[in-house]
Image (cartoon, rainbow, N blue to C red; front, side):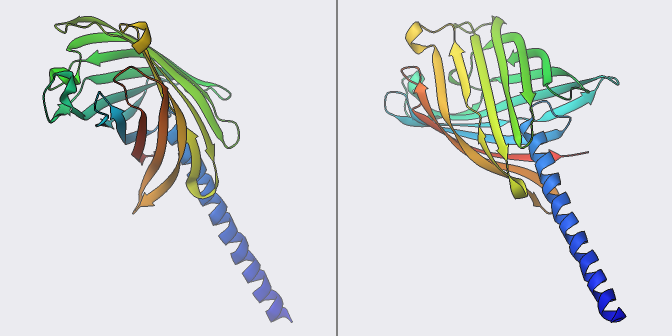
Length: 269
């Protein structure tokens, strides 16, 4: 009898230990997913976000933009972090802008943002800071040939399984040899619902307004969503995501819809 009781106790302990490991892994996946969905998390990451725009230009062609977006946080003191985000766009698009044939491929203009964010912000996480436009385009059709600066702010909350928030910015050009000034507003709201085993649902459209364009070509307003998952390749955690967005409002030569595929390499401390 004692032997049977001992075996039952051992099996019960093993069951509890296994369940605890599964719960800890799920919690770890959830925590990591929330950090990956937070633009100002204290987390080093390398997102590779590929956006394919369909139906662009007069001949309904395709444009592809691969955004390489390293995120690097710095601890300034006991109370504040500086979260830096740099976006290097690698672009392939039809050269209808110049009236030629074939495609134009190269690097677009670089955007750098630095968010000052408090370390202790339990209910509402926020960050604010400058954004800079750097004329790194390798072809005139891929950039503005203008230096620009502006401000950016992000607000978010993470109640339960949710991560919801908004990121807003506006950039104005102040120097450069380009013919067209830059006055660009960007608003990305994001709604994420996290599920078991690192899976989540997401909607994160990027709404833009080009204030230099005429009234009928100012806004690009997408609507849509997708899903993602936190997984590992070896010991490397990765955030994979797929989404589709339809432009309910767009400029005359703008894309009809966009397919977004992202791999975000995460480097938790």
